[in-house]
Image (cartoon, rainbow, N blue to C red; front, side, top):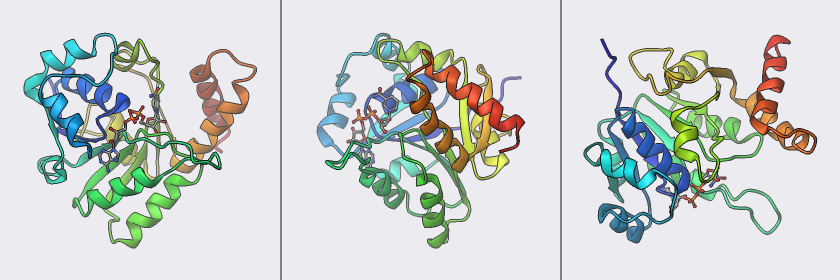
Length: 237
Ligand SMILES: NC(=O)c1ccc[n+]([C@@H]2O[C@H](COP(=O)([O-])OP(=O)(O)OC[C@H]3O[C@@H](n4cnc5c(N)ncnc54)[C@H](O)[C@@H]3O)[C@@H](O)[C@H]2O)c1
């Protein structure tokens, strides 16, 4: 018997958000996508995509019944407890990442009760710990934080998402990470088709930062992350 797919909420109808939403819908999830730009939501509801990504328009069309696009955060929050942050983190003039959209997601999320916030946006080292601390200060200990960085490449993002050769997860507790990789039923068999690597949320951000340095000498960034992560796991870092 196929396990029931949980409904999902996605913050951000940009490149990562739309690929994520369409692919999850293709995998059988009901997905609500929320953005803050009215024009974008109007376009999506009118069947117009803001950019071209091979296969994406077809995927959205085929899964229309499972996808909805809204400005209203309460629509996103009703009926799901699994939220994906896919908002932009642009560089500031000083070169740091501007995390204001991430914080706006945390504010907009409010108190969803028991839930999991999955971070797909690219964030600097230490962000996971700051988000965890903020959630705790707000009395939201029941909201788990899980990092799940994307390795999608433009032009083949749909293929990369649907047939991942690896899924990297960082979480503060194993159960929350397992909910995202699907090892922990009934919440989510999100990615039952790819090998998953789970490690601590704070360690994962360091590994990904290390990866940028190692990139200079290695061709395949994702393999590189994997090797460092495997090493760190086996050495119990
Ligand atoms: N584009 C890539 O190749 C790529 C690949 C991997 C990871 N990433 C990372 O993923 C993140 C998203 O990138 P992108 O290219 O999809 O960005 P994008 O600019 O295409 O989309 C981000 C969307 O988030 C929306 N948004 C902002 N605040 C919001 C809120 N509070 N609620 C709902 N929506 C909100 C914006 O209006 C925008 O439509 C970034 O951190 C980026 O670094 C990007």
